Length: 167
Image 1 (cartoon, rainbow, N blue to C red):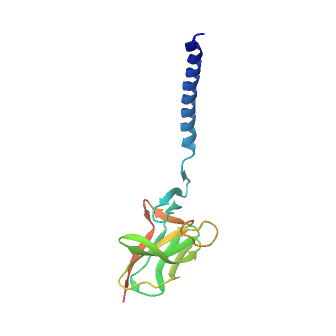
Image 2 (cartoon, rainbow, N blue to C red; image 1 turned 30 degrees about the horizontal axis):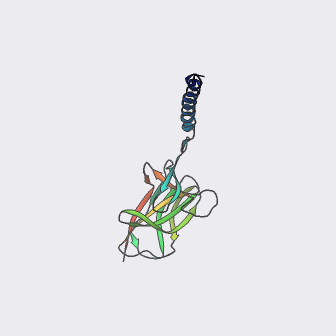
Image 3 (cartoon, rainbow, N blue to C red; image 1 turned 90 degrees about the vertical axis):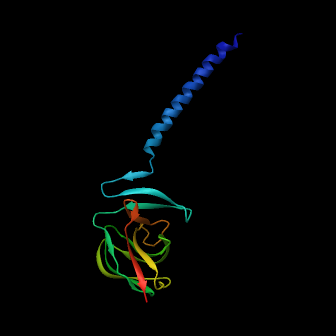
């Protein structure tokens, strides 16, 4: 019996199977994108290398802002004004080497505009240091967790306002 007659159909079937599998895999991969677009917001999955966790960033909504002034170091931070488009958290973070560091405190805000918001801190700010105030979108559990609540971004940067502490 000629073995080449037996192997030829097997090789053809194997090659055809590989091609079909490759094409099917590519088309299904396109529908499983990690980004989703809606009319109001854009969410993307981001890996936080400093914490080894996956967090979500949420694109800034129209008109979202934070205004904070330099202030005396202490156990609270006073925010002059803030506007949030969805329920979330206003958090105070240390700035270390130009990067956001530890979160010192957060306050929950419902959708709307606010004046004179005070954030109680877990530990006081230090004189002559820089801090950032940022917005997180609540994941629905009404408990702040930076690993599960979404940091609101504008382009590639968080919606934030920097301030320095003075004596």
